[in-house]
Amino acid sequence: MLFRLAWTPRKTSPARSHGWRRKVRERFRILVVCLGNICRSPMAEGVLRARIDASHLAGQVDLDSAGTGDWHVGQPPDRRAIAKARDHGLDISALRARQFRVDDHHDFDWILCADRTNLRDVRRLAPDGARARTGLLMEWAGVEGDGEIPDPYTGGEAQFEHVHGLLDAAATGLLARIEHERAGGDGTQTSD
Image (cartoon, rainbow, N blue to C red; front, side, top):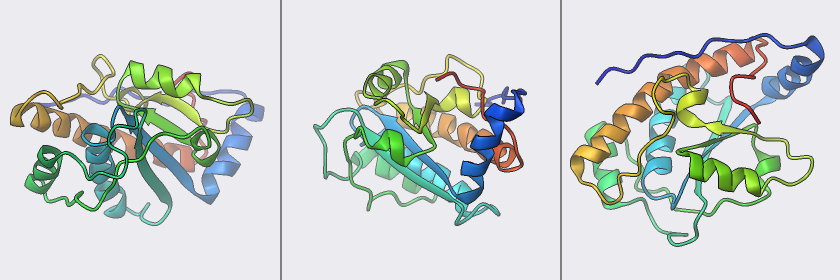
């Protein structure tokens, strides 16, 4: 399946973008969020980490994943997510689920969610003065479609493969977006 990248940089006022550039130059911190942190977000962490580590951005981007729910805290990713990642040369078996925390709004630059429900829940927990910007991973990465990554939990191998394909497309767009922001872009594609 082919995915078309649609993200293009937009301009904002120098006052708004200047502070963001200063933060991005030091280190770029991204948190990927789904519901339970055992399928979509650990797969995303694995795919994105592999792409970042293979690029000249290695060592410049911190990446983590979390779930809005607490059902799987401390557990490894779903066995099907581990198997699908392995099919694509990635090992995510050492990852452990954690629940999204209010402090994540201060600890990350971007919190990128798998679907609109996760995004709503993350935004609802945003404290005053939150540092992180929030959005949908697929939209932020510029992948056209409905913006959501479907939850493969109740599906089979085909659903996990579909999710991997979406995440692979998102990884391409994510690298381009980080490059743009590191070069002085403003990062205003996704609304807060």
